[in-house]
Image (cartoon, rainbow, N blue to C red):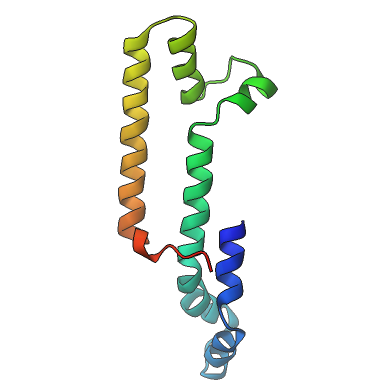
Length: 118
Protein backbone atom coordinates (compact mmCIF):
# COMPACT_ATOMS: atom_id res chain seq x y z
CA UNK A 1 0.00 0.00 0.00
CA UNK A 2 2.84 2.40 0.75
CA UNK A 3 4.40 2.37 -2.75
CA UNK A 4 0.99 3.03 -4.25
CA UNK A 5 0.29 5.84 -1.81
CA UNK A 6 3.62 7.54 -2.42
CA UNK A 7 3.16 7.43 -6.20
CA UNK A 8 -0.43 8.70 -6.00
CA UNK A 9 0.55 11.51 -3.70
CA UNK A 10 3.24 12.70 -6.14
CA UNK A 11 0.72 13.21 -8.98
CA UNK A 12 -0.46 16.83 -8.98
CA UNK A 13 -4.26 17.28 -8.77
CA UNK A 14 -3.99 19.89 -11.51
CA UNK A 15 -3.61 17.05 -14.06
CA UNK A 16 -7.08 15.74 -13.31
CA UNK A 17 -8.51 19.27 -13.32
CA UNK A 18 -6.87 19.96 -16.68
CA UNK A 19 -8.27 16.76 -18.18
CA UNK A 20 -11.77 17.58 -16.97
CA UNK A 21 -11.51 21.16 -18.22
CA UNK A 22 -10.46 19.87 -21.65
CA UNK A 23 -13.69 17.86 -21.94
CA UNK A 24 -12.97 14.48 -20.39
CA UNK A 25 -15.43 12.96 -17.99
CA UNK A 26 -14.05 12.23 -14.51
CA UNK A 27 -13.88 8.52 -15.37
CA UNK A 28 -12.01 9.20 -18.61
CA UNK A 29 -9.62 11.50 -16.76
CA UNK A 30 -9.02 8.79 -14.18
CA UNK A 31 -8.50 6.12 -16.83
CA UNK A 32 -6.34 8.10 -19.25
CA UNK A 33 -4.44 10.51 -16.99
CA UNK A 34 -4.28 9.24 -13.43
CA UNK A 35 -4.11 5.45 -13.92
CA UNK A 36 -1.10 5.40 -16.32
CA UNK A 37 0.87 7.53 -13.89
CA UNK A 38 0.07 5.24 -10.96
CA UNK A 39 1.01 2.05 -12.82
CA UNK A 40 4.62 2.00 -11.55
CA UNK A 41 3.36 2.24 -7.97
CA UNK A 42 0.78 -0.49 -8.55
CA UNK A 43 3.49 -2.65 -10.08
CA UNK A 44 5.88 -2.03 -7.19
CA UNK A 45 3.20 -2.84 -4.63
CA UNK A 46 2.18 -6.02 -6.43
CA UNK A 47 5.79 -7.07 -6.83
CA UNK A 48 6.59 -6.52 -3.15
CA UNK A 49 3.45 -8.35 -2.03
CA UNK A 50 4.10 -11.24 -4.41
CA UNK A 51 7.71 -11.64 -3.34
CA UNK A 52 6.75 -11.66 0.33
CA UNK A 53 3.88 -14.08 -0.21
CA UNK A 54 5.79 -16.55 -2.40
CA UNK A 55 8.14 -17.77 0.31
CA UNK A 56 5.99 -17.11 3.32
CA UNK A 57 5.21 -20.44 4.90
CA UNK A 58 5.56 -19.80 8.64
CA UNK A 59 2.32 -17.87 9.23
CA UNK A 60 0.05 -20.21 7.20
CA UNK A 61 1.65 -23.16 9.03
CA UNK A 62 0.94 -21.55 12.41
CA UNK A 63 -2.58 -20.37 11.58
CA UNK A 64 -3.87 -23.15 9.33
CA UNK A 65 -1.64 -26.04 10.26
CA UNK A 66 0.73 -28.05 8.12
CA UNK A 67 -2.03 -29.31 5.80
CA UNK A 68 -2.05 -26.15 3.68
CA UNK A 69 -1.43 -26.76 0.00
CA UNK A 70 0.98 -23.88 -0.53
CA UNK A 71 4.03 -24.67 -2.62
CA UNK A 72 6.37 -23.26 -0.01
CA UNK A 73 4.83 -25.56 2.63
CA UNK A 74 5.23 -28.52 0.29
CA UNK A 75 8.89 -27.69 -0.37
CA UNK A 76 9.59 -27.32 3.36
CA UNK A 77 7.79 -30.62 4.08
CA UNK A 78 9.80 -32.55 1.50
CA UNK A 79 13.09 -31.05 2.64
CA UNK A 80 12.57 -31.43 6.39
CA UNK A 81 10.19 -34.34 6.96
CA UNK A 82 10.01 -36.76 4.06
CA UNK A 83 13.60 -36.09 2.95
CA UNK A 84 12.54 -36.32 -0.68
CA UNK A 85 15.02 -33.74 -1.87
CA UNK A 86 14.47 -34.52 -5.54
CA UNK A 87 10.79 -33.60 -5.35
CA UNK A 88 11.61 -30.54 -3.26
CA UNK A 89 14.15 -29.43 -5.87
CA UNK A 90 11.62 -29.97 -8.66
CA UNK A 91 8.99 -27.94 -6.82
CA UNK A 92 11.52 -25.20 -6.13
CA UNK A 93 12.51 -25.17 -9.81
CA UNK A 94 8.83 -24.87 -10.81
CA UNK A 95 8.44 -22.02 -8.35
CA UNK A 96 11.52 -20.31 -9.76
CA UNK A 97 10.28 -20.71 -13.35
CA UNK A 98 6.85 -19.37 -12.39
CA UNK A 99 8.31 -16.34 -10.64
CA UNK A 100 10.65 -15.68 -13.56
CA UNK A 101 7.75 -15.85 -16.04
CA UNK A 102 5.70 -13.45 -13.95
CA UNK A 103 8.70 -11.14 -13.73
CA UNK A 104 9.11 -11.16 -17.52
CA UNK A 105 5.40 -10.48 -18.03
CA UNK A 106 5.57 -7.63 -15.52
CA UNK A 107 8.65 -6.22 -17.24
CA UNK A 108 6.86 -6.27 -20.60
CA UNK A 109 3.69 -4.64 -19.26
CA UNK A 110 5.04 -2.04 -16.85
CA UNK A 111 8.81 -2.08 -17.18
CA UNK A 112 11.17 -2.62 -14.31
CA UNK A 113 12.87 0.71 -14.93
CA UNK A 114 9.54 2.51 -14.40
CA UNK A 115 9.10 1.33 -10.81
CA UNK A 116 8.95 4.46 -8.72
CA UNK A 117 8.35 4.89 -5.05
CA UNK A 118 7.54 8.54 -5.01
